[in-house]
Length: 301
Image (cartoon, rainbow, N blue to C red; front, side):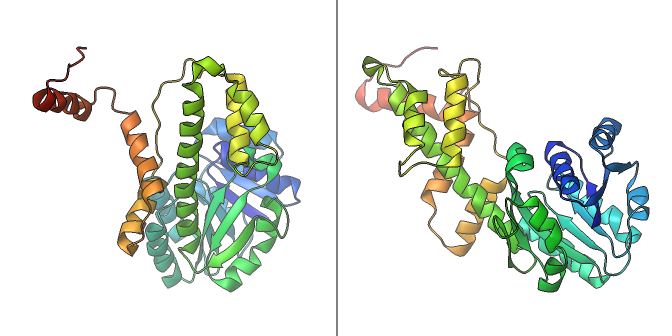
């Protein structure tokens, strides 16, 4: 199958390379000429504009987008709309909000165009291990794209599937990332407790290695955590500042909308916010309160 790849960042370029290795013909577009050249070095073709990319693909066209969520995705979707013909299909493999995917799909449907939302997990390891893909879209459309998903997945019948209609793919990936927040927070807190017991002189990397095999808490995320502890046991040089890319917020919003209790995911998100407050007004006020009602000492800056 011949398809276009829009967005040649690390993940997009790796996906294009895996598709090429699987026998698909890929033409990629990215506004960065360096990214296009890097793709060509891996054996794929490139186009220097969306117009050129669309012209290089046979009908019905398939285009996979791997661009950041929000305005960039909207701009790309809008720019493609007048360039495509009936029965062409766009796959959004980025981390779009599922509500945005529903809106975009409705516009495309009016023009007879296919729109598939594919929540994609795998990160920088996807080229080697394969990608986990949660696909939302019309059943017939998704089935026609099966060879692409089978190539990108860890196995033809593993790690991917159509989870429901348009919007469901990104909704499922959103919740996946919310769960990820909670798991990461639990591992971080657990290892922090171990690290704060100096009299035992615990080797956190060793403990992580023990837990990786046979333990109830073993996981790929634990493997990555253990690798990180092996490289930098004290986390030296790393600022205690944790960003969030949006999916955790959307998951909490969805939980509130649906009336579902999600305290672990919510608190994990709040902890990320807290990590960014280097001059916490609330903590200063808490210290002041203790002084007011109990005469407790205040530590000066």
